[in-house]
Image (cartoon, rainbow, N blue to C red; front, side, top):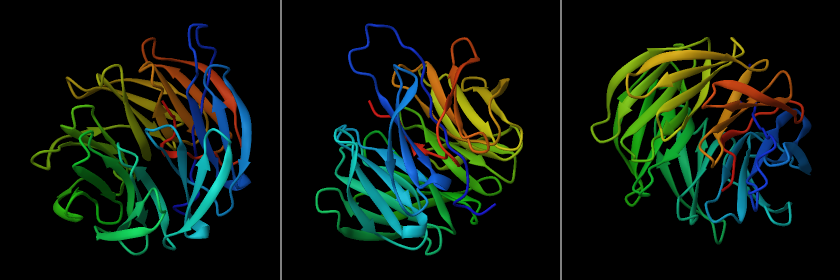
Length: 316
């Protein structure tokens, strides 16, 4: 399966009436060339925005104004105004644009180039490329430390994770992990990095300060994306070929459970309530919603064909 044809997640369920303004999830549907806007309070898709170029990665800005969507076949990314639910710009970056992230201050967008082994730095105000950072082979997943000092890059064909000094725009250290790391997650303290190793069927736990692997955990078949929930006490990992999500206790670093979701689960993101997790099921074109406290699927929502949503696709 080509790197740009993978699956997504989105979800929603009825939240309590005290929610004033529900967060929205933005789901890339690669086979439909569209993005579904999911109202997490209503538990349904409320808008569908056409996006050409096989949309894949998603990064919602912390300021709540824009959602950035990587478009591999268009060689860049699209900018979605989340209030208007309309595209406001398309930006040409590179032919291998896939992983995408936005800085915590919403000032810069980072786009991984699968072919050129670089990460482009884009000014969010001007949408101009202001730098390129050389990283490892086939960069994919990107995460940024909460203090906005470090960018971490999963180098899929390099079997490694790189730590980038954001101010200097250069790699300061690279650590070998499992086979073909793809998705990354970072905890709220910025102390641990988790990498899903697709071909290794493992998750690597990396100390962010020393860039040393402190544990390697066996999960399901073809782990793809992962995210933290319940005050970072649980790590959830999608296993593409198992149709499951592995649950890891981050204190003991043990797999404590496995949940059945849809067919070919890939993208995963945590709701701001820190309880519900959304998983995109590529073959089903659905999103499974997991209650991470009860450890059960509480809803399944139809999205689009080839849903993927690789990245942080839920706004605050």
